[in-house]
Image (cartoon, rainbow, N blue to C red):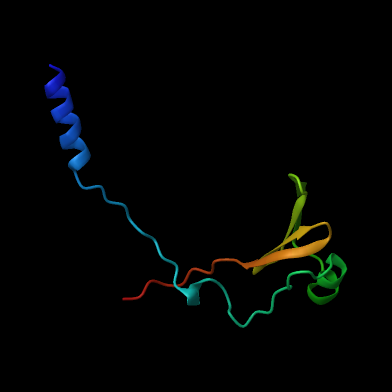
Length: 96
């Protein structure tokens, strides 16, 4: 009986496993011409350049990381300084 279980396990492990890969082309990751806040900029400088965010998320974690969401991008802050800016995905009509 143990041999049958071992054989069955080996056969199941030998079956091919497949997964779908989803790729977002670079051109669909938002407007590449859009200027974004740069690493190290202060929150005050971001406010001056881009205005008030649409939404502010409070700081979480250690070190505390906060996020400001604008219409086309989000800005992540640590200790009042930009650590990253990310464009929002802008879906386009499917190609035919």
